[in-house]
Image: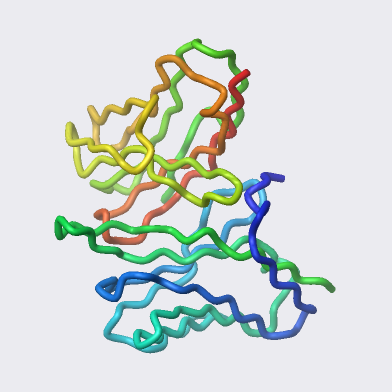
Length: 115
Length: 112
């Protein structure tokens, strides 16, 4: 597979456990956040997004929590399955000094799920 | 099926030999972008395009060119590849630079 996982923090869990993957962002003006999943040999896939006027958003087996006070984002995966093994990374809609914004990607966390 | 298609998926070339990686999307997206992904560095944007004939540099544009003659296509051109351009490349598209970006499967490039 692709070596995108090198040098990444790793979270190892057992199948059936809940997983929590964290992401810190730096720009308090960022107003939109996305979580992506990247499996070995594939491109990043959209999982879930959240706007800054929300604290929580739920999808199927996934929940994203946004804490604007400490500039922290988390992805919770319920009943983790081996198929959830991948690199997960967050993206924020970050504003530059010029006033333009663009999606900026974090480096990611590798999730390893053992049966 | 909505998708972003990159070709080729794997490419080995030699220093200085011009190459083009193609990217096509069928979602009628205005925004398209190229990234490179390297261990420990994450996704870094090379170039992006807000619409046809509108392109701009990202964070790491040196050594790359792009064109956007049609809405669906956004090829990445390496006029004279060098070994430091060995990387995993992704094309992405979205409604705008601020929205969800949908990624292709990637192109693994090795420059010898």
